[in-house]
Length: 133
Image (cartoon, rainbow, N blue to C red; front, side, top):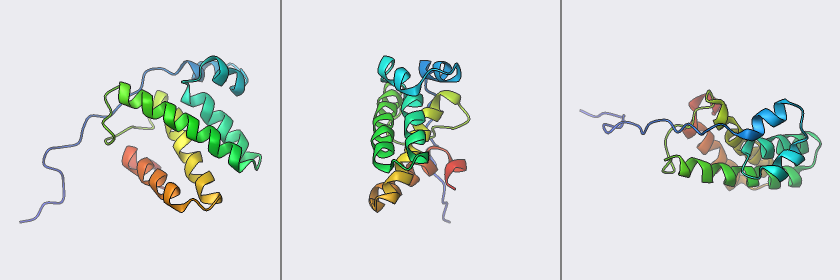
């Protein structure tokens, strides 16, 4: 008899604390100002990365996304994440990190960094299966 599921279960979802940058961005504060004042805000780096990608500035988008990705990894680890397990998009404070990973995947793909693109896509799928597409 073969089972394809993990008998030990999955670790609990990692839920980041509120990202102060989110409220500032929602209030209309320039993302660069938010990132400068709150450099740990993945939401600020995500906003910068998305704007750069939309503006055709792929390398800039890659750099912003990578910064937000690393800030998000730091936050996840401080909150108990061990490098695997759910990081649900439905939890608003997780979104800045996941948005950074999304832009990083797109920018990496655009510059031919296929291994990094694949790692980012796998991280998104592992974090929240609804993001796999």
